Length: 151
Length: 421
Ligand SMILES: Cc1ncc(COP(=O)(O)O)c(C=O)c1O
Picture 1 (tube, rainbow over the protein chains, first blue to last red):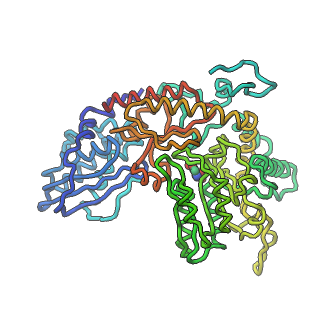
Picture 2: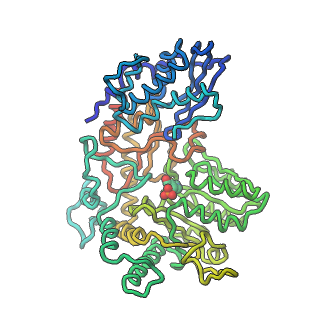
Picture 3: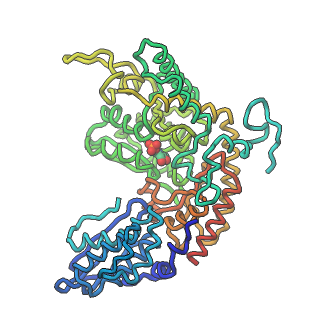
């Protein structure tokens, strides 16, 4: 039987209870809104770049524990990263939550704390919850202003 | 609760009430396990499970009768046509329509609403006219009207709901006016379970010369419906929510409307004669049934209605009401749980939210316990907006559900609390 605690890890529950960087960034130079029609999750990601480095990042929104924790941990993981690194990290994160990560591949960037989402790969319907905020971030970086949908 | 064990004749029920233990054996899927736990299927408003009698009807049709209908001279075609047309009569009786020709086969409730919007709606609606829907409609009884109103320069108006989940009839009265052409409301809400006073609402609409379409998708599995008594102009439902197959649905329309309405999709079967200069259309209901239909689905729908009527809708309703009361009282004891939809007149649908726990998380944890519920906006976003909720969890019951399954739901919710304490 699938194990609940593999999905709802303590770190995830903690970030769901007390999301970090949960604020509107007034002087954001990039921002985008994401919407998961399946469960009504909504998230807005705010971003300020200094050159090509993430200087400030925050989010606001409401949704399930997986989507809120994913947004919170994402913002923590990306501060100080270059846009290229952010994209590479999303790639690896996506592989992680879809169960496609090659465990032998130790190339950079390291997923760090993001590995707590590994359990999501056993729950295919929850992958969208984990990736909504990342898709939204990517749209913000590409300065696409439409609402992102994971449907 | 006690069940007598002496069955009357061959009926699967007993004189007092339904015997769920016995009924459950008719539904093979209910003995399945999920994630190693017995399945508690509480997502009946999304789609119901099918009794063996319905499964057999599909299989029997394809094993013995399959042929195209209405136009063959050979025996199989005649038998397939007879079986399909017998379903029309079966549905007529089920809804107490005046004549079988008032029963139009469609794919689903969704298609039924679109059909009426695109035929009757399109011909009677002009700029400045009004269509009334309610705040608690399923998207399938909103969007077709919205599309039509946009096309025609007409106005879509909305009956508000109360906090308990009842339509505000005073407000409805105020919305009705000589520009009102169509009123489209749900008989039973798929989110709240509210049984709306549709008979009265039809009468009020008719007082202003408006046509009324009732969405019966969530009503027919739970209550006896008599379209003559309701006096509605159109009534629709889906086979799959009433223990029949997917891909078959019913539109009832009063004969005089069906006769004067333009056809729906063009094609075979809906015509009388075709030339490049002029095509004449078939009579209702065939005028609305272009192309080869879901014959097996139709035949199996008849088997589903037989099954349900053999149980007795009054007994089904009595049993489900008792189960609803039990579930309501059990869920009310779960701390931090709030029921959404507490109208006095309700079908067995329970929407709820928990403080601090998103419905989607509840859904995943309950699933691991074998409890299948629905979470999300239930295709009723305007209603969710009214309650200020992105989503709810919803347990929707059928006559084969048991108190033990409600208990499993409550145990699962305790698990949810443990995880999210
Ligand atoms: C009240 C109501 N109307 C309409 C529908 C649409 O039914 P279908 O998807 O079978 O067309 C549903 C199904 O969820 C419903 O609950």
